[in-house]
Length: 195
Image (cartoon, rainbow, N blue to C red):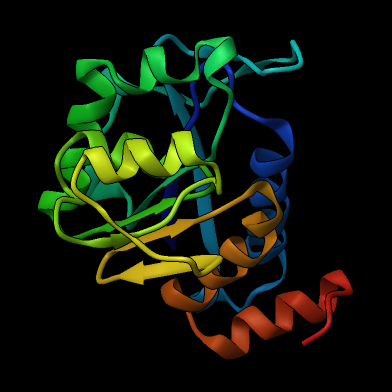
């Protein structure tokens, strides 16, 4: 079974995170055996606090990650005001992102999650997007990314999106990339989304 690692830090935004968990959970439960996707959450210290104050216990801490166990790293967005970038810009998180990229595994971000990928230097000269504000797009550009105006941008193994509203679409795209379009459409139908 393929497995996705979901990187969370303090200041994460609930909607994006729980959208991902919901869609991937349906995939894990309702896909045929060869199309099932498992997932685990990871953080620096094992517990994270959201922008709205919800605390979550993680499945793993970064120090105990073997990236060969995973096919993708998924990074939901969050809020700078709640310390989102403090941990994402840490040496441990930046190293984790680089190690996934070095193995050509998928790096999937929603909203401002792409800024943490860009800070590693991985997006230098590559297409990407982030939250549609001058400040966030300017930061992505500062790290060398070529800004695109699409809601979701795919550049080889890196997927980025421009807002919380894309989290459902990114989740289904993740299923499609890791299994098949048919499987993604099946899960969409089971969840009541238009195909």
